[in-house]
Length: 209
Image (tube, rainbow, N blue to C red; front, side):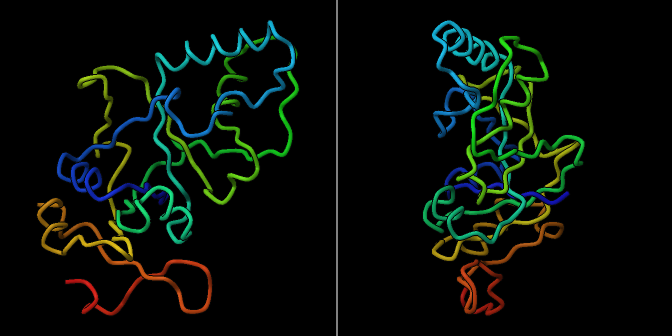
């Protein structure tokens, strides 16, 4: 399945050169409701949920993808205001967990099961639905100065690099980062669509040096 990862210029080119992606830590995600998709009015349960989140975060990390590269809001939020990149990966669907967007908090029965843990890790408030998010959960193992990575190999194959509409990244910069992948990976620049509120491929090659 083709999914997309938005990233800024600096780390996008770095990740392409190094053939790897940074794994996000659960405690560092941008939504304060992460893992807290249940009702937390009970003080004791709230404390236990906080402890459970911290415990899970010690062993499991997340890489976030979208099912759609054309949403301009995604580019604005996660690709440095359209100055960054969107990396398209082919990933076996068995490894992708689709985020469920809900209006109301999940009701609980005071039992913390593995099934509930992974349900909470892929549950978000419905207003995030524009992201069309898919997640890959990865066991945290070796790190570099506290940062965890996963390689572009095996179950995750880079297929596309889409350059943001406001990006100053040149073809040469991108091809240098891709190296031997430059003949295997599709690359193009995005632009705002003329009919709809979406980003589209810019077929005017003169617009990308």
